[in-house]
Image (cartoon, rainbow, N blue to C red; front, side, top):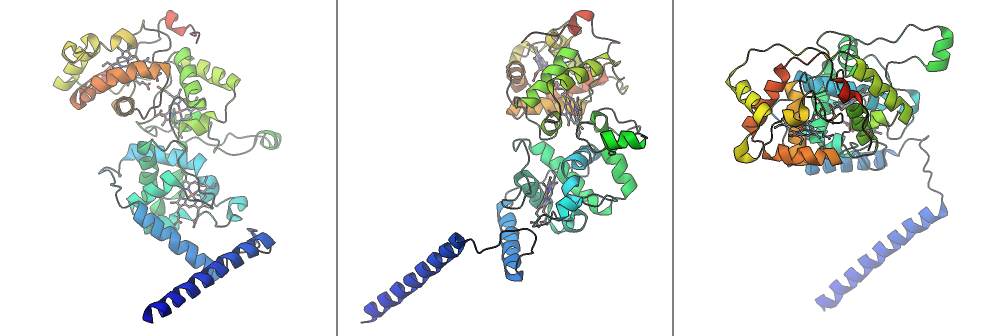
Length: 379
Ligand code: HEC
Ligand code: HEC
Ligand code: HEC
């Protein structure tokens, strides 16, 4: 008897559930639900969505470990520079309120100055890397580039206490809006926010404002610069910072920019006295390491090497090191050229990476690459 009663309960419950699902489907099919963003959610819907969001983030980010060095100025600066073009148009920034278009989204992009402290670094990492479904919050354009996402997290950690002046300096490197006539503003716009203002990141005018994670472009050959930009544009090189930038450029602008930076005199390196590590680095650069099959770097990265191969002298050790690690792990992406370098990077030990990058960072770049390296290569 008890068995039959249980069975009846189960059937009734299943019937009620089926009716509820059918009812919900009919309601959707009728089109009576107002999907418009012009009216806010009911309080109960809002609570439910917010609850689901918080729980999802808390669970999904459980295994993420933040790196020890989030208070690192190079990370914060790079994060700020990307934030200005890639996030502030939706979220606003210190001294710069959101555009009314963004505040008319539902849900509204959060005021991060206020809410960022309510998340841990691991949770912020998860949010910035993955975005949110059904909200307009985008995922990071190249999810493999964990290092770039951490730069954004490092910046978000400093955001709540940042003054408008500090933000302007960090994110625009001291670059101001050009003084323009009314007509010029009318025709070209007013802001410094364009993603394609390269100087914000690559050669900011304020002294010491550049992040060591951003490569120097001056003195690189035209052929290499053009190739690198095309690799970003066509997705062969991964970077959630650079790919949105090149999306603003057409083929002609890429050629003009490569020509411009190739003509600039290379910047001088920070002078550093040679220590034992750098000496070992010099040996690797000049002769390689026959034991592990590492060829001499200068065979390809010297003044007389192929035009499409990059120069390393004058770059910061941090940038060179980050790229070697990306090449080693496959996170830099895959092009014909990067495949050549990935094989070599995989053979370098951590200690060798440290010494050879510090060596190259200490070399003063030659005044100008030899004329033969200026010839654009055919591909
Ligand atoms: C197209 C507009 C848009 C862009 C661009 C954008 N976001 Fe968002 N973001 C949103 C929206 C919408 C939400 C959802 C707010 C919510 O659910 O409460 C959101 C949520 C977030 C949250 C979670 C806030 C919270 O407490 O719910 C963080 C953190 C965040 N964004 C960071 C960023 C960062 C960093 C960038 C740049 C890399 C970025 N966003 C780019 C629209 C945007
Ligand atoms: C928000 C900061 C930012 C802006 C703005 C920016 N860049 Fe970059 N750029 C970077 C970073 C970071 C990298 C290294 C990316 C990587 O890991 O591949 C990079 C890499 C490059 C490289 C590859 C250099 C090499 O040695 O391999 C070129 C070329 C380049 N950028 C050109 C430009 C040009 C031209 C513009 C303007 C149209 C520009 N960038 C705007 C941050 C920026
Ligand atoms: C056989 C030629 C060759 C040799 C030898 C070589 N490289 Fe490379 N390297 C390349 C090429 C080609 C690229 C450009 C990859 C690309 O376009 O993505 C590159 C890129 C790099 C980059 C990234 C530069 C940038 O601006 O982003 C670093 C760092 C680097 N190499 C370090 C080294 C070191 C250190 C050695 C010596 C241990 C070395 N390379 C030996 C061919 C070589």
